[in-house]
Length: 179
Length: 292
Image (cartoon, rainbow over all chains, first blue to last red):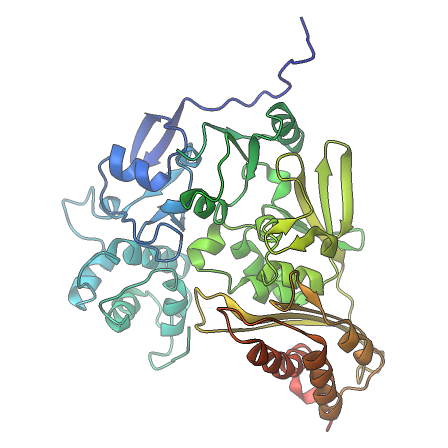
């Protein structure tokens, strides 16, 4: 019987969410009010995404979310439902521990010091390179792509060099520009 | 805990029904880039979140019936990388291109940018310059009104976020003599709030040597995005020349009254406006079309 208080909507608040994380499917119960970052770190044991500022400025919590880089500290965990997510742990999995070329390049160029920003840096670089497979890549383009990932150790030069070395098509190596 | 229940609304109607059902306890979540920060610092709490990010019709950029329509949940990245907007509405495409960082632009939406009602929100400044109309829906039905009526005070928007929803922004389709530009001054090029930002829209006269119509929006010069109406009036009918642009910059300098803030002193911001007004016009029309 219909009453005045009948619930009109058909949407349901989900009790559990299902998503693909680092090539594996997970179904986990919803913890109300949780951030994606906390779900990844505290419940799924992935310490790759870090909390730096927790306010979307430093990028240490960056993950690849449906092919784009997002700050996991600003994403409600519920939003992961149906998503394909990659953290730094997922980059080298499945190839016998071999590092992803971007990770290897960071090592080769000495682009890692304390390491806190590195997972986010590598993932933002990965998204950038995936979107620019046939575009000539320049250093200003890399700087803009990494502008949401702060590093307090390296001064960025080696990080930019590491990403530039991975670009399939390289633009003018001398091109400079402020970002 | 930030909230108790999290819904994905499947349609605009369902969003309204959820908001109505929870009688003020529900909040709309779009990109979340501002809301999640407000939750973190306990500026905000809500029992129920209604996520509108999966409603397809809210995410679009299209031209129809002489108008351009931008869906409320269109991300800054989608706007900044749209070839259509880059070609015809530089003020919007380049305005949102400097918001936050790539990660923020991938999540943040134009609707959220406006709903937060910050006087120097890059998206709001661009839309005010375009003379946009804000379209939405409230329990009484659909509404559309000038975007400037949305801004009441810093952070205070005329919309009730527990009952109403922004659906889109519309503005007139591009004319052949329309030009626009967005200029911005900040401490760094990335991840920095603007010390001054300005959106400019112009319609050139038929000879294309003067200005037929102009709209100028500047932040943060007042409690809401500021319209430089005296400068606009001066530019209407003016010929394009260095002397005219110098005089226009002087007028803008006089008509803004910013305050001292952490972004910069009032005097500094006034000087910026003088310089950038000229730069914005030159960028919009191209330096070569301006006589001495």
